Image 1 (tube, one colour):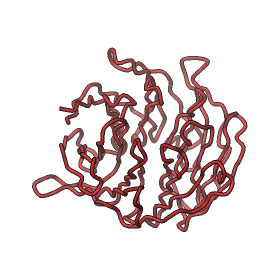
Image 2 (cartoon, one colour; image 1 turned 60 degrees about the vertical axis):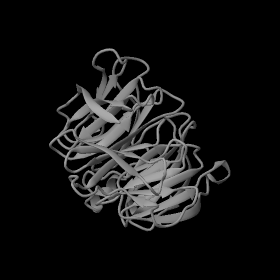
Image 3 (cartoon, one colour; image 1 turned 90 degrees about the horizontal axis):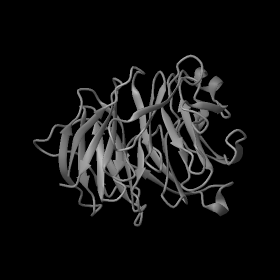
Image 4 (cartoon, one colour; image 1 turned 45 degrees about the vertical axis):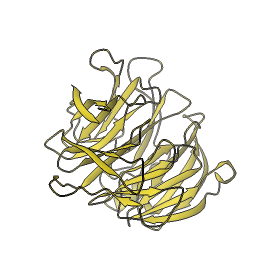
Length: 329
């Protein structure tokens, strides 16, 4: 398995915090410290710019984002105010704001000095349910069938003051929440418990800013300070089933981002030395390092596979956004 550079989409929007494809694979978004950019991805030639936006006031950071599963709407979150926004691209070539900061934590974030804080955002697959992370350890669930009129369904609390990352399982019944104290809490948010989530288990492995479920839901990966923790969700225990730390003779670096391949038992990891490593994880307790590719001279901050699995989007601290091809051999 190898990756090769296809297109350099570098912007001047500052640090790239999040890259992601829409579920159909026709759009790519890069959120950064000054703005966000959307491209149309056709597979023929370089991606074409589709939209550009600078949300909020003051620092216009987009630190996390998610595509609405049922509407042509993008949800974003980030910046000093933890400003959350909805953006539509249906009526024109740009990004049109639909509704801005319905759950802003402006006062609390400023009081705590959490400049540029990201508190997580994730859509429940196939539904209009959105989870958002907040200061003081709160996670809120919203019904956003009408993005201009979000309706609050319920909430849950984690032990630490800040939420660092959120991820739904592919089936949508479990929500993983990483907090500032290094815990990853699993919550039952199935239909019967959407308004009153039920705690399932707390995983420990180190503070994580990135969470990713495998496509079949059998594994959960989290970037910890010095490795990537991998849990078997079928046989859950608090400790990871494996830790993906690079071995002798292989350059080391702090783990920054993780992403599962949509079809293969492969996990991509980006690190602080600008490298992307590919791991074969068909056996969760015996992960195998397949390749390490230096892709940049600055830390990798975000990764995202195209739904087809043939492309990997990579973002870096200095504003790099690039598309790489992925080949099985």
